[in-house]
Image (cartoon, rainbow, N blue to C red):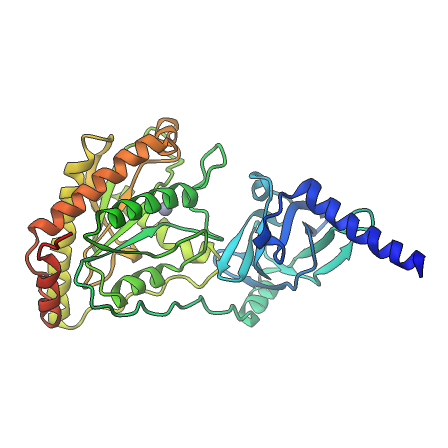
Length: 416
Ligand SMILES: [Zn+2]
């Protein structure tokens, strides 16, 4: 009897020691598994990804083609991995990403260097400290077998969000879209910093300033480090009947490290230049990179009225882009052509003026330094708030007849 109690106690102590020594546990994390290490190893045509976890979790894997990747779905896991963990190439593994894919669901996306299928995922408990080792075997297969496996896969649909409740609040609604998130890190600086984390800081800062001003309603497409599909970002803005949509990014152009400075993009079927077209193309692949279905193409606009609305909306988008340019130029370095157009999926709402701000490039050392400077960030978000102020002060109507009343009410001065 005593012996058994002692054993249980040691096991519990062992776990506590494991958690205490390696993981600064927060109260809310006590139920979530924590991943503290990820190791890759390869032998012949088989590679293995082994995760060290604080407890057992269920895992479900499938593969997807174009680009070739293996996806492992998990319940929400608190990843505390080394920043470099996913960037080593080994066997069939090109690299891997991980993060929150939807509330309560985490995901690991393995970019494959060659077609491979996922074998039986096994977990064992390490006796010395109670850690759980989960091994994900990846077996190299030929293209035909991979195609069959990916066709059989049934990726769970991207999460859908309830539409924002309609409010009687007449203040203009600004939707702030922090680029990337969760399994999609966006650009990665050579120092290992993720675009998703940098831009989230700017989005939060801007939201804080607008909320403090009290003249706007503010909604964020993501309020934490979670993956949100591109189409969902557009849907959030349209369903909430946003008056302005601002997407914030900070990309990298590895082929041109000399390119730096900020650029403001508005949507257009035709890109200003090849560089803008390439950037939009890369951004539009974000869903696929996160292990979700690629963003669906927007249907052709056949309706002449809708086309007129779109044209008018794009006019408003350009007006805002210009006022943003005016406000940002004194506080930050702009790229050689600061206002450009390109076919970004997130800029395709026919009825919500939308811009995408590239704050700078993670590939430029100087840009990266500035982007991470809180003082600089405060200046930039302050100027963005000023541009918003200017936009709503001068705007008359947006030409959406059914909402004209609401919109003219929206621009009336609001007493504090
Ligand atoms: Zn981006």
